[in-house]
Length: 79
Image 1 (cartoon, rainbow, N blue to C red):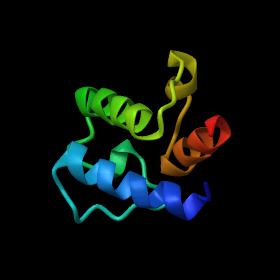
Image 2 (cartoon, rainbow, N blue to C red; image 1 turned 135 degrees about the vertical axis):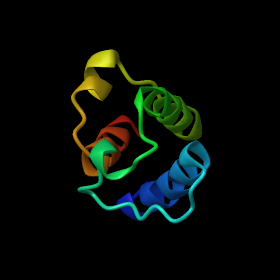
Image 3 (cartoon, one colour; image 1 turned 60 degrees about the vertical axis):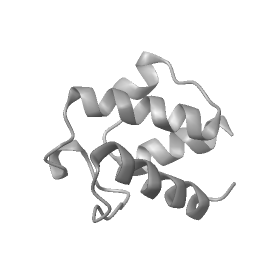
Image 4 (cartoon, one colour; image 1 turned 90 degrees about the horizontal axis):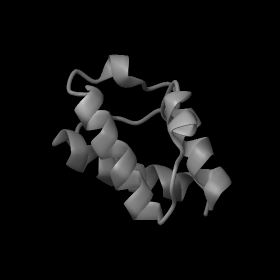
């Protein structure tokens, strides 16, 4: 799966989790850039990505993520 496909799925997931289809995903986008991105939304986001891609993350893996680009890279490494 290439990066574009992952971003396409991420767009749908972010839209669902944050109930906002206007969020523009970029590699630099982080929780600081999305007002609704709190700790509960973060957990929902992680679980939604795990389900969408049929993968699992460790706490250490998701704890070290700084932005969407790193999250996409992590997903790619598990596929």
